[in-house]
Structures are given as C-alpha cells and as structure tokens.
Length: 110
Image (cartoon, rainbow, N blue to C red; front, side):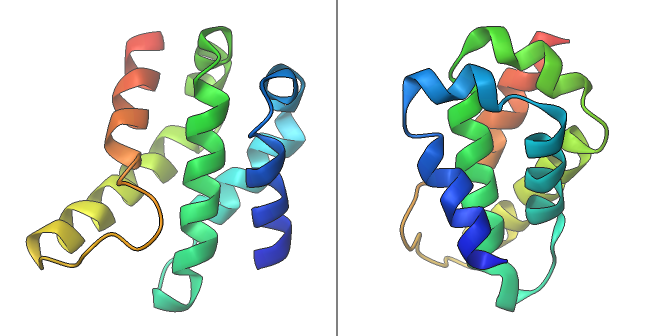
C-alpha cells in the first residue's frame, strides 16, 4: 500500500496530471491513506497529504476536493497529528507540515 500511495504522490508532481487525478477513485484512495493512524503508517499518510496538497495547487480542484466525502475530516485529523508532533518538538523528516495550509485552502473553497 505504501508504494501505491507514493506512486499517486509522484504522479501529482506533474501539472498536467493534477486536473485529471482529481477524480473520485483517486480522492477515495488518498482519503484512506490520509486517514490511517499509527506510526507504521506515517510515511503513507504523509504521501497522501503531499498528493492532496499538490492536487489543491490547481485552484479549480479545490471545490471538488472540499466536498469529497471524508476528505476534510482526514486532512483535519492529519493537522491534529502534525500539531502534536510540533508540540513534542519532533523534527520534520522529508516534507514540511502541509496538512494545516491544505485544510485552510480547502475550507476557503467551500
């Protein structure tokens, strides 16, 4: 599962993929990945959030993403996890903390 989430994350690197990937099936998979709990799923969850953040860089994707079932809840949970890591002074491993800015951009799209 980790490899599939990383593959989605890497596909969102390309601008031309972002519009086409804002599809129910892809968003469902990213919501599942972002919703996983526990340290063993940390990298998978991070890959899902990075992919969602990249999809949201296309402003036209944001309203659809904000209305997608479970997406805002999953991102909000990731925001809470990131806040707890910040409070515990845990250093960022590979990516900046992206969940909070992603959540804010999606809420503004509602």
